[in-house]
Image 1 (cartoon, one colour):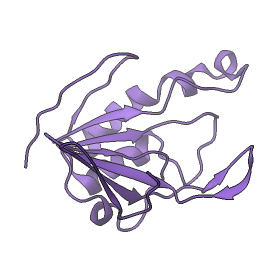
Image 2 (cartoon, one colour; image 1 turned 90 degrees about the vertical axis):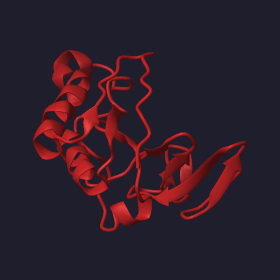
Image 3 (cartoon, rainbow, N blue to C red; image 1 turned 180 degrees about the horizontal axis):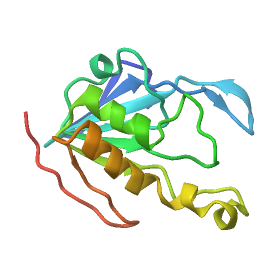
Image 4 (cartoon, rainbow, N blue to C red; image 1 turned 45 degrees about the vertical axis):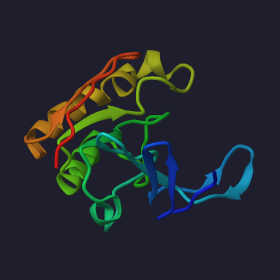
Amino acid sequence: TEVGPGDTVRVGEVRVRAVPALHDGRRLPVGAHRAPALGYVVEGEARTYFAGDTGLFDGMADAVGPVDVALLPVGGWGPYLGHSHLDPARAAEALTRLAPRSAVPVHYGTYWPIGLDGVRPHEFHSPGDEFVRYAAKRAPEVTVHLLGHGERVRPEAGR
């Protein structure tokens, strides 16, 4: 089901609400087609925010609303992340705006331009650990779950 910001779709007992994101809507390398950049709030036993690709934006907390868990991107596919992406420090700033009970860093360490892993491995492997450190300083009340590939956690619902 195609959605835009503010649209809601029900899947059984789960409600999925599309929320805005700050990211270029082009779909390269296929062409110049644009689509709205979106994140999603999934509401079931808990409210989980999957940010997708986004940067910080004014009104982020209002658009997302109260959430129990935030899945935040902390890296990307190259050595430079522009303003429409979250790096570890900007993701920690997002925690201060969103105030979830817990957070999981995502979108790092899986896709990297060939050759850069050997040249700049810290930029590939370290964003999760860096996010943990920034989050501890900026949002110490948020529990951060640093997961390895294939690991999972079941954070408690709150609010």
